[in-house]
Length: 195
Image (tube, rainbow, N blue to C red; front, side, top):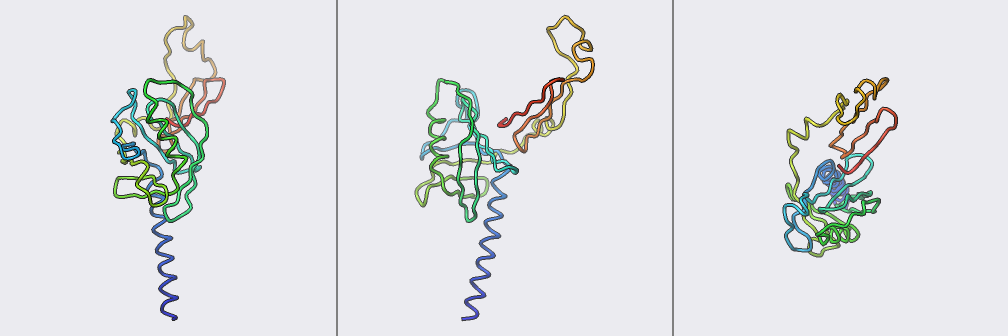
């Protein structure tokens, strides 16, 4: 009986370790949507790659299915459990909205996920996966974009650049890991998520 109790404790610890490892394996990555309700998804929709990004900090997600930017929060509760809460999104009307509508529905229905190598599935109970994703490797161009950039030229105005910004130059800082950009226009601050 004592051996059984020790074995249960060990299994619980292993399960927690596995859950933590799985949670870490899905955040901080861009996941490309490859399948929705059992049907393959095109490489691009309306010229854009369909994806979801689960951020490492703040339990926020950003996504797009070829038209509007979608965002909100997610909760990981161990053992592969996940719950999405929708936040704000843009309100554009695009030519092909079927995948976006389907992705929104998936986020409402998903209650768990599975990871198999570089593949992620969103599921409801033990049914067939609602959606499948593939991890996207970060390109060198993405890594080079990260960091702060100060404006040193702008076209159009007839006033010299130094006259437009005598005290402080505008800048932008990209944080691609969190899918965010922040900056200052030399007067007002701005903050953008869901890049």
